[in-house]
Length: 415
Image 1: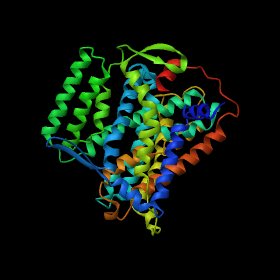
Image 2: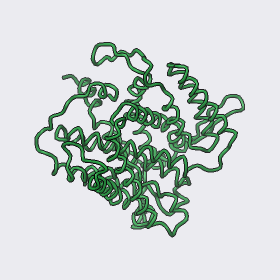
Image 3: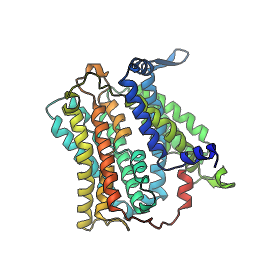
Image 4: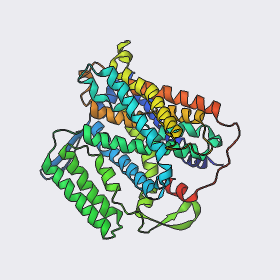
């Protein structure tokens, strides 16, 4: 096998995206805690301006990453949500109950623990939603390290919980992290939604046309003070699922007929996993520990986040799921016991990407103006959850590979 074939094979590995996230985060930490820190800060604060006549958007590079690149991530999330609810695992009502209840507990308990720890501080309480998020790329990356011992039902459950978690995060961002709304700009965004609805109704299949209207909507939301990344989710909901688009699947050497949604989801998967999320991690994970004492870890904000992610997530996901099964509202998937459920509950405590993103909304001021750094709690809580979840699953899963039934259609769409 040649070097290029090895590299190509690695990028197709399920854990590759999660590993790149870890590398990006470590690189950011190194730069933030060495003499390279001034280069790191200068890079992220570099102003970038896009202007057309008198209209301009001027933001620091960090904000272009958080408001711009992350819109692409949210577009992919929206596409996956729509597909799953229309014809995926979540299209069957019997498959919804357990992950929905688990996700509800996994958001409510961490948020409650954080609020209980930070109730006394009117600034700190803004971060209540930070530990409610789950990073599906990281969590699935850790799960994939256990190889074929992991039953498909376990992966589907974790993915489904993360999907409901994403829905909750989108609602939270829209409702609680938006202020000083410009209703004029919001009106332009509403017009874009009407146009997208008409295009979908009339059977328009051109992804470029949808993208152009989506770009205008993104600018309108950016100017309205409603977080611009929501444009990605809203656009995804109007991309047609059924209309055929011809795409050549080179890895199989034949032509497939796919919908615009599936085609776009397929095309975005690699750029998001191997560029958008690692760049976001590099830009947001650079926590400076130079000169920091115990207060950097014991302040109520990072402490509340770490406690919420590690203790709150496992308690919320596991306990709510256990109750749902015991009262007969749901049942455990085949091949999944309570020990595996507990291991997955621990993995749900890996917040990272979404937690960092919500943290940037909750505490938008420069770190120098704050007596805490919420990213410390995110990194600690996510790291401990990953280690504990891997250990529990390694001990509880069967030692031999689990027989699985391939699902070519889903696999092609995802990878």
